[in-house]
Length: 89
Image 1: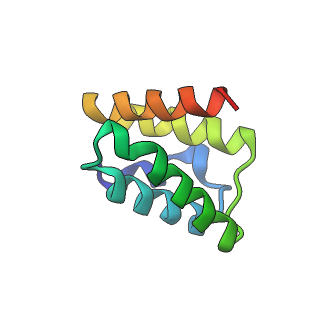
Image 2: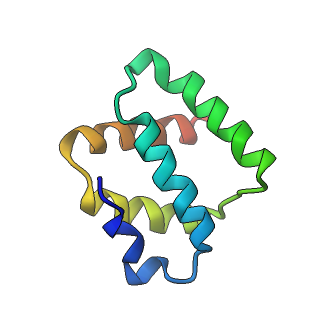
């Protein structure tokens, strides 16, 4: 996925650092297998805490909506898995 998604109008008021953090996350997770996803997400959460990167529910919903528009079918599947994990908490 290119970084074109970060230019969407609905994201303009979200801190660019947060969007760059997510772009790095997408890049790093690109080739992960299913069993690698949870440990990866836990490491990302820790990294986010260390860098004080947090997202409101509204930011998450807007970001996910935009990313889905730009995602490949494989990326969509990963997004759905992550969102399912998120809803379980």
